[in-house]
Amino acid sequence: MSSHAAGSVDKKGPVDARGHKNDSKVQTLSTTPEGTIIQTSHVAFDEDYDSEDSDSVDVSLEDGVAEPDDFFGERNAILADCQKLALMARFYAHPEVSVITTDPFATSCCYFDRPSAPKVESVEDMEGRAQILADMGTLKKLVRDYMHPELPVTVSDPSAMSRCYFDRPSAPQVESVEEMETRAQILSETSALKSLARDYMHPELPVSVTDPSATARCYFDRPSAPDVEAVEDTEIRAQVLADTVAIKKSVMDYLHPELPVSVTDPTATARCHFDRPSAPEVESVDAEIRAQVLADAIAFKKFVVDYLHPELPVTVTDPSATARCYFDRPSAPEVQSWKILKFEPRSWLMQ
Image 1 (tube, rainbow, N blue to C red):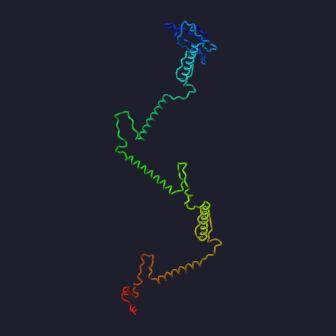
Image 2 (spheres, rainbow, N blue to C red):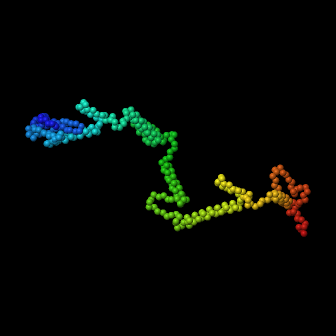
């Protein structure tokens, strides 16, 4: 066996009955930033043992890098690189796998306990969280069963039996499908009639449509529409009415100074119309005499009316007042009855 600085090829291996080499152990050496890796692999090939071309497989090194000079050396190098890549990929994808080393002085930090590692829940917290989620799932199922009794119940016991929720004796009366459809139809027609009535009673409301190509004429600009005042005429009419109301108020205040003045300002003050310096002179004693004379005249007028019209009823405020009849008094002259006047004509009427 020939030895080299970077690696060697061992030709000693099993030989078949024909003396052909069918297995070979190849050791390759590679230098990486982490250190030196020695990889040993068995390469199977079928070649004449006595052939001169197969006596040895030389691997030359230049600056610590192996360069195969034939087909088998190149294949061995490719396989070694693939194995190293698979090893590195496994380490990267599975950091939890333990690292096996032959160096007793090698040290490393734990991947999960490193300072930059994310916070990890403890086993108790994970179990508690799982229990809480399980309870929430159970509560959710109970709430769904309570809120939706119409959902089917799934059981694993083939002998399980139950009664229908809607057919139980205490169940409220439920409408049939036909009644529900009829009621829905009536409500939809009522809503349509309400919409038509609102459109008829309030033509000024805007019309909402979903068809962008729909068109319509204006209700107020149609040929049969009544004449409508312009905005300027409406404003002028409103101004004239406001001025008329103000003039009416001024005239009423002038003609009726005795009416109270209504103001909204609590601090507003005013003088009396009758006590103003420019007010005309008012009688004092003469007004009392005049009032007495008017009262006496009213009393005489009442006596005269009672004398001239005795047939008028007498109005009194005393409920205990009594009176005798004017025509039935003892000193009244004799009066013939209506029947005598009707059936016994007077003699002077016959003359």
